[in-house]
Length: 209
Length: 92
Image (cartoon, each protein chain N blue to C red):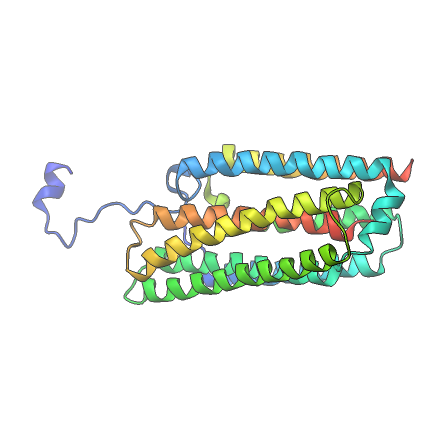
């Protein structure tokens, strides 16, 4: 704080607000963005592997794709997109500040977790359906990819839910303010990454034939 | 500086994502088998959906060029590989 600032009354001197996009950095911790791009790289390799494996055996992949429930895939896309939107609203609410910010944000985060929970439930129904039909990793190369790729993503949704629960808990306690919401932004960025990956996964595995 | 997205902007992006998901689903249900045009349309929709999520929900719209280029690079690279593989499948 400069000498001039120190001489001003407290009501005028406020710390500069550093949140989304401050200094050109993406919101949240820099480390989470390194992690996010590492994850995107892994998923990218997975997606390309699936696509080139399909190119070698189009008939099998197209036939097997018909055994998936595309409607449930679409429902899950809607759930994850909405969960991402709710979390974005939570972050914006805290960033705007105000007396009701924490209360509103914690509600949006709860809605986000409900969306993520809904996704997991739908996916469990899909897995149960496949397992009861005797399908497993060694059924064929399509199901090897389908099960491993979607389960890898499934685990990311669970981790995202754990992170959301942690930031929800802190938000409820009023732990984030407009000038200090780095943790919330970090958790939200991870959650959006999980959504981003599904947006490619859904058309690739459920739709394109 | 704070770059807080407006409620209108976030909601408009959400609605776009929902409509785009509906279009993707519809293309999968009614698209002719093996149509390269349909495949490209589906990948183009996925591109715009991801871009909106990254720019507006993740806040990359206000990040510097490095982060935006990294995200766009990942998107273009992965979706291009999928398109190439799909084309290889047609000319099997």
